Every structure is written in structure tokens, then in C-alpha cells.
Amino acid sequence: MFSTQFVLSFALLLSLPLLFLFAPRILPPKDAQITLPDELDDLALFRRATLASLHSPSTGTIRLGITNPKPKIAFLFLTNSDLSFAPLWERFFNHSHNLYNIYIHADPSAKLNPPGGVFANRFIAGKKTERASPTLISAARRLLATALLDDPLNSYFALVSQHCIPLHSFNYVYRTLFGSRFSFKFSHHFKSFIEILSDEPTLQDRYTARGENVMLPEVPFDRFRVGSQFFILSRKHALVVIKDRRLWRKFRLPCLNTDSCYPEEHYFPTLLSMEDPNGCTHYTLTRVNWTDSTGGHPHTYRPDEVSPELIHTLRESNSSSSYLFARKFSPDCLKPLMEIADTVIFRD
Ligand SMILES: *[C@@H]1O[C@H](CO)[C@@H](O)[C@H](O)[C@H]1NC(C)=O
Ligand SMILES: *[C@@H]1O[C@H](CO)[C@@H](O)[C@H](O)[C@H]1NC(C)=O
Ligand SMILES: *[C@@H]1O[C@H](CO)[C@@H](O)[C@H](O)[C@H]1NC(C)=O
Image 1 (cartoon, rainbow, N blue to C red):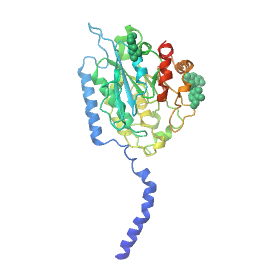
Image 2 (cartoon, rainbow, N blue to C red; image 1 turned 135 degrees about the vertical axis):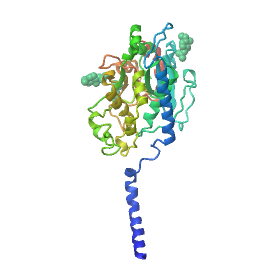
Image 3 (cartoon, rainbow, N blue to C red; image 1 turned 30 degrees about the vertical axis):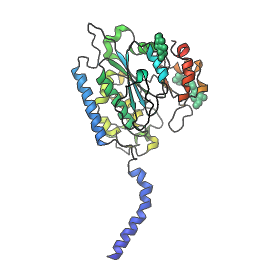
Image 4 (cartoon, protein in one colour; image 1 turned 90 degrees about the vertical axis):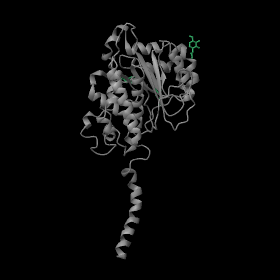
């Protein structure tokens, strides 16, 4: 009796170091999980937004009545620190004839200096966000749902971060997205500007980052896509995203291999390439510089790199549209950017 107990305790003692060794692989990473109350909150919000769009006469499109309202762009700021470029955006929105709305999702644990002006009181109910976890997907979906509910005229939904800057005037951005006045009534034909790629060398590792075969059967490897986290979605596609339950069940699984796990770079491109590939451009309008990237972070521009030439270079694109936004810029780039705002950035 005594010896069995002894052997058992000894075995347990021995297995302790093993547990520590393998725990990070067995147990999901701490904090990165989405709690049930958070999930239920989100579901309720998504359901409200879905129902509202069913009952509103402008189901996914803008109805042109006698008042002939113009469609708006919803700017969705996803941040976990101060909106350092608020003054630059403020100037961007200054000549917009109010054809926009702003929504901000901030990680509640980040102590932000509340921005004023057009950003004042534009915060939505935010929850914790963390890299290498599905929380960034949830935050983007919360922004989309809130914007869908808030204003039926919101017709495009542009996700940006605190490190993004505009590369053109508001009017230029508006014309790029909506084209001529005439095309407003065909708003259900608006394409989403979202990058969708299938030829990334790291795709296999990213596919198995939640474990072998866990994405099946909903997401076979040959349907798995990657793309920039920053997109501009049409109203129709914003609804597709908040209605989805099928893929979310898979993408919400915690990352076991956090080095290869960027759920927000996969969920949106995979979902939209399955639901409506022809309704998407397959490229993003937000420029990012991946040269010499480290730890999944792109090049961050410093003040001494900011120049009129840089803005012109960042606009250049191989698609039919010029880039509209760029990232990442360090907060201290604000001063040199403001100096060239009117003469370069907002001059088209
Ligand atoms: C907005 O425009 C008005 C008039 O054109 C100008 O007086 C004001 O300074 C501008 N605000 C910003 C933040 O650029
Ligand atoms: C991209 O970043 C690299 C440094 O990582 C820099 O040398 C290069 O000039 C940048 N490219 C552009 C277009 O800004
Ligand atoms: C455009 O395509 C060329 C050739 O593939 C590539 O070298 C260049 O970097 C691309 N430019 C931009 C702005 O993406």
C-alpha cells in the first residue's frame, strides 16, 4: 500500500517538470481566450445589427429617395494606444461635408488620452485585444456591427489603426470608393477592397497554428487565405462578416503556436473569398512596407523619413487605384506630416 502511494507521488513529482515543458502547448495561452460573456455580448450586438438591416428599407444598399442621401464612409479605428495622428485626420475630415462617421475600438486596459474634435465620444464598447489571438477579429466585427447599426448610410467600412495615415484628401478617397454620382444607385455592386492571397510561403504553418486538422471541415487548406488586416468592406460584405458563425467557430480557437498565428489576417480574406470572391478586389488600399520586417511588424516610419517624396512613393500602386492610406508611422511623425498636410498629402 505504502509503496504504491510512494511510487504514485514520485511519478507525479517527476511529471511536474514535464508539465511545465509542455504546458504552453497543451494549455491555451493565458488571456488570449474570448470569455463566454464576451462572446454572448458580441452575438447579441451582431444579431441586433443583422435584424436592423433586414428591417431597414436599405438592405445592404442605399435607397435613393426624394432626399437623395449620399452614402457615407465609416472609419473604424482599431487601437490600443493614443490616436497620435488625430490632428492629421481632423484636417482630413475637415472638407468631407460630413459624409463619414468615426467609430473607435480601444483596448480598455490601455489608458488613452481621450481625443477631442471629431474623435470625441466616438468610442464603442471595447474589449481586450491581443496579438496572436482571435480578439482582433472580434474587435473588428464589433466595429462593423456598431457602424452598421448606427447609420444606414454607412456604405463603406474602412478599418484603420492608430499608426495609419491618409495619403490623399477625403474627396479623393470618396471618389475612389464611390466613383461618379451615377453609380450610387448600384451600391450593391460596390466591391470590397481586401487583400486575398493564397501563395504565402508561411501559409501551412499558419493553417495549423491552432492544431492539426482543427479547421476541417469548414476550412480546408486549399480554401485558407491570407491578407492585410486593414481593409475597406462594402455594406453587403460587412453584413456577411457579422452574420458568420461557421468560420468563426474555427478561427476563434486559441493559437497553440503563437509565432505563426495571426487570425485577423486570415479570417476576413478566407470568409470573403468563400462567400463572394468576385465582389472583392483581392488587394488592399492601405500601403505597408514589409521590407526587413521583424517579429511580424512592418517597417515603422520615423520623422526623418517623412517627406513629400515618401508620400508620393507610398501612393504608387500596381492596381488601378492609388493607395489611400499607409502604415506604420511612429507617433513623432505627426509634426513633419502636419507640415506637408495641405501642400502634399491633401493636394491631389
Ligand atoms: C477646417 O477648415 C476651416 C475653414 O476652412 C479652418 O478654419 C480650420 O482651421 C480647419 N480645421 C482644421 C483642423 O484643419
Ligand atoms: C521600406 O523600408 C525599408 C527599411 O526597412 C526602407 O529602406 C525603404 O526605403 C522603405 N520603402 C519605402 C517605399 O518607403
Ligand atoms: C509592382 O509590381 C512590381 C513587379 O511585381 C514590384 O516589383 C513592385 O514592388 C510593385 N509595386 C508596388 C507599389 O507594389
